Image (cartoon, rainbow, N blue to C red; front, side):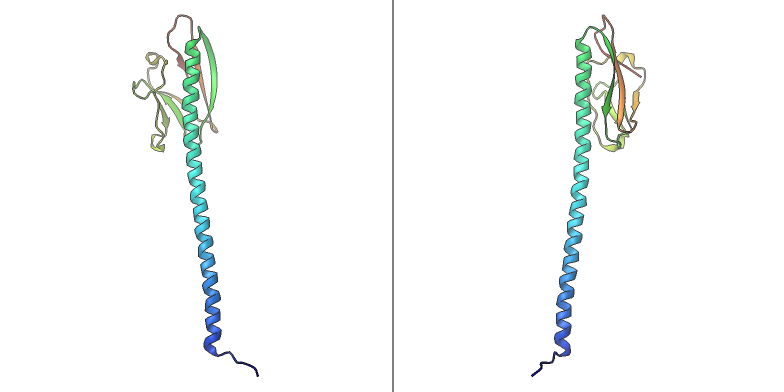
Length: 148
């Protein structure tokens, strides 16, 4: 005896398959969205780490030049391309800041720099993720000069 499937039973089976497919697609979309969110956060953390590393390396290089009797050195630092430049100003609280100011990266107070030799903000352009800064100290000077 052959059982016949009624019109309602066949459609119910199709609906269950469709629901499973739709649910799978929704899960895939959710997983992809979380993946993009995680990658975005990872890139932001990497940029912040790069900025922090720059501040630390620059302060160390200025301190090393300050501890020596004299010297001149052109140094290169890696920065994210989101930062278009680095500037040194006479501001006593944060004498180093990043361009554009809207990027949200905080500046720093770099010690042992002769700010009296800076007439206006001294800015260095970020070229393909690299910033070049020259430090100089002559005999008898107590602070390090940043050259443009």
